[in-house]
Length: 516
Image 1 (cartoon, rainbow, N blue to C red):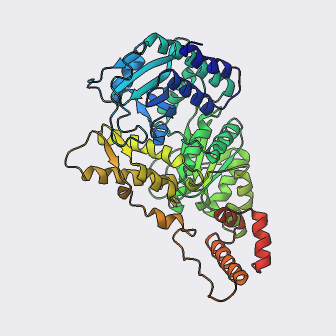
Image 2 (tube, one colour; image 1 turned 180 degrees about the horizontal axis):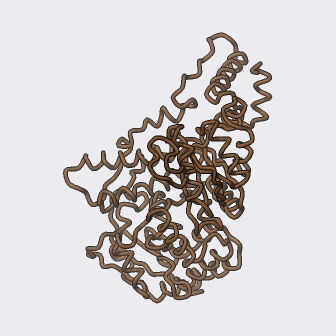
Image 3 (cartoon, helix red, strand yellow; image 1 turned 90 degrees about the vertical axis):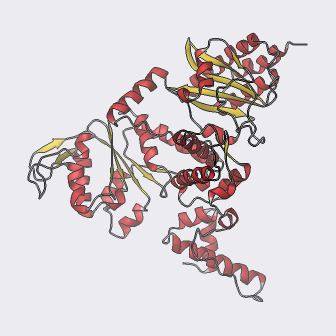
C-alpha cells in the first residue's frame, strides 16, 4: 500500500501537467494536505510586498479570502516566513493567532494547535501554508520533514500555476510598479479588485485585455461599484504604469474652474489667478488621465476636451501658446451617455471618442458571494484601525449580507461594516479577544430588501380580485414593467437586467401587453 505522503503527492504531480484554473489547482492542493495531515483548517497565502493574501482556504470562514494580513501585525505569520523549516507553535504560545474566531462553523472558538511552513520559489519566499486545529494535540506526532516534502511540491504547483495562467507579474516587477506608484501618488497604493464571482472574473479579464491596448475606455456602472478602482487597475496593467495616473472628479468642481483644472491657466487669466499652473492633462503627460463623472462636464468644456483628444494639443486658459500632450483617457460615469446625447446634454462626437472600449462594472447584487470576500477585506481594515485582535462575522450576519440588494454597492458595504464594528465595540465594556459582528448590528432588514424589486420605489399594485387569472397576471406584469421603465427612464436593457429576463423576450411580452 502506498505511503500516505506518496498518496497525497501523486494527484499533485498529475495536476502539474494539466491546465486548471488557479482556484481549482489551489483547492486540490489544500485537499491533499488535509488528507496527509488531518486538521480543522488549512490555508494557502501568497506574499505580496509586506502583505499575505489568502488564495485558498478550507475550514475557515468564507470572508477570510477577502482579508489581507500585514506581516508586521501578525507575529506568527512573520515567524513562519522567517523560518526555512516548518514551525509548530506551542499550545500556550502567547503570540496572537490571525485565525482566532475564523474557523468555519465554530463560532468564537480560538485555535489551539497551529502549524505552518514557508513556500519558496527559486530561493525567494513566495507565501505560506498554514494548518490549524482546535485540539491542542493534533500536530504532536506530525513528522515535520513530511510537511517540508509536501511544501516543496506545493511550491512547484504554485509556480506552474503562475506560468500557465500568466496572470501575475514577477515579484521584482510588482515591487517596482508599486514603488513608482507610491512616488507618483504620494504613497497611496490603490486597492485591489477583490472577487471570485463569474461577473467579477469577466470584469478582470476585460481589464487585462484593454489595459494592454492604447484604447480610450469608458467605465460605466452604478454609484459605489468601484469605477475608480477599475481605472487604477487598467493603468497599472498598461505600458504607462511607470507614468502617473491623474484623476479629476468632473462633478466636484464649479463650472468656472473645470477648464482651468483640465488645461491649466496663466497668471492673470481670471480674477484670483495670481500664478500660472499646469492642468491635469499636462500632469498626466505620458500617463493616464481618469475623468470621473465625465457626464457632468459642461457643454463648452466638452468641445475643448474633444479638441485635445483629437489633436493632443491644448492651450492654457488665457494663453495662445499650444502644448502637446500624450495622454490616455479613462472616463467613468453612472449616467447613460447615449441617452444624454439624445437629450442634447452631451456631445455625440465626444461620446464616440470616449466610448471606444465601453466597460461595465457589475453592481454588487450581481456578484453573489463576493460580498463576503469584500466584507472580510473591510473587516481586516477595521481590525487594524481599531487595534483589535480578531474580528469576525456571525453566520447570521453573513446570510444577511448575502440577502441584501446593495443599492449603494461596495461603498455601502464598506460604510456598513465600519458602523457595525463600532456598534459591536460599544456592546462590550472591555475589548474581547474575538469581537463578533452579529446580524442585528448590521442594521439591515434582509427580508424586506430581498423581496423589494423596486429598491425603495412604489410597490407594484396588485390587480383587483375577480378579474380572472390571465387578466390578473397580465395586469400585474404590465404594471411591473411600466414601473421599471419609469425608474430606468425608458431604457429597456436596464429593465430586462433588473427583472432578470432576456431583452428579446421582454420586448415580445411588452408588445403583447400593449406597452409601447
